[in-house]
Image (cartoon, rainbow, N blue to C red; front, side, top):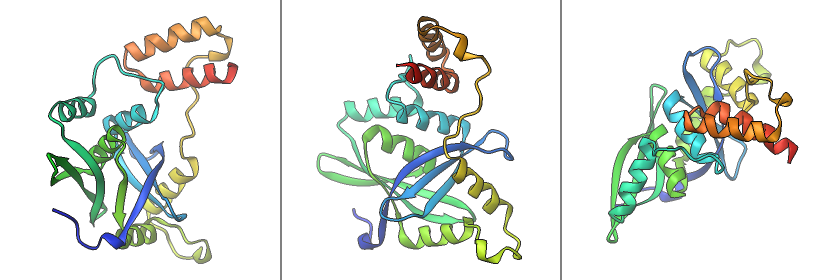
Length: 212
């Protein structure tokens, strides 16, 4: 099976993840048009944001497999490959996606939440696509037009525009990491990973990287 209108597909990459200051527990996954400047922000949950962040952070490995890691291990065992992810529909602000999978040269299309699909795309190193009309529609809906300052922008437009601007700007860590030695930081990093506190681990890793 194959999707129609292949020529209208636009490839996306992951620009970053931002925490929503207005929607408690929500994050914005920022996808960027590969051959253009448009961005496609998608609101996702905390668990999916963590799973995507871990896949992006090559230096941090969870002590136990997360759900998406388990799916990857299962697929590898049965020789199933996720070839690509397509965000194929946008209805009432909700994005719908499909996994294009292959086993024994037989291709199948599996419906998936967009956040899950992207978490798996990272683990399979599969490309992410959307249709041009979806990118046009979402870009128009989410973009704040500076030439029309008198027009009221929607709350979502303002929120997403702020998230795009902040991208991956981290919050200040709760502890003063600058006063710690490298050995202490490494122990703290190991402890954070063991406790699956990946947000703290990322801050510690950044502090270690600054000193090396």
